[in-house]
Figure 1 (tube, helix red, strand yellow):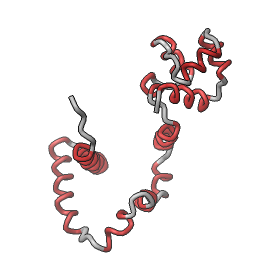
Figure 2: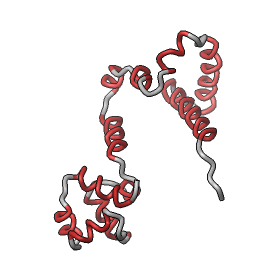
Figure 3: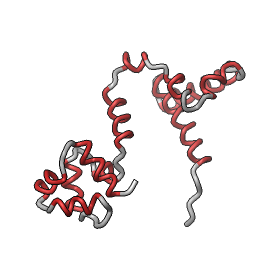
Figure 4: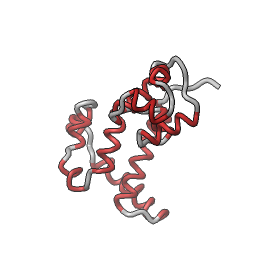
Length: 155
């Protein structure tokens, strides 16, 4: 997503018109329009002021994604009881069908013991509790996936 598109999405999500933002920043509405159309760029001071206005960090403003913001807000505000009501496997299975079918093919027990051993090792070596050690293992798997599947960048 371009910077202009991020600025536009953040402004819309915050409920401001171009005129309102222009007035608060001390610039013209046309300036806001040019920023949002990627015709010109706001300076760093104006960008920081917009981030504050939209209740975002500067990094969040630069890479604003309303869908991602909504997911993050849900995670931050949902309690354990609400999370337990969600069948995450079923939900992710809509995007990745293997999650709903692998149990008929994979001998899960063959993988539980080695994973429990890794989890115990994390608990002993780092003092993690059950949940934290599980989350660390899950994150390690995610990092492994990213390392093996991210496109290579040229130097």
